[in-house]
Image (tube, rainbow, N blue to C red):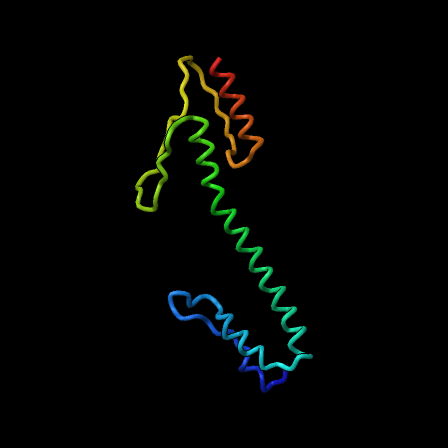
Length: 130
């Protein structure tokens, strides 16, 4: 961009409470002042940028939903409602999900967000139930 337009395309941010986010409406209004020869490649770059933001938001959404699906799996498998810890809890919440009458110890970790480990856990539970 020519030096005279440098101030036009500064990132302007939204008013609070969204002050951490770029105000794309103002950005688009500024872009409309560009000549068509400059506007076309500019919009192509902007589209690419917005698509990358969309991908990131999708990854954040799946990251946020992952614990819920793990909790749902545990609750469905063991038939117990789990207490979800909060930041105000002083100590970690412990749940006894399954117990056996036999003596001895067996320690195994299952990654419940992984479908393969979910299947292994179900097979293990079937084994100890018989």
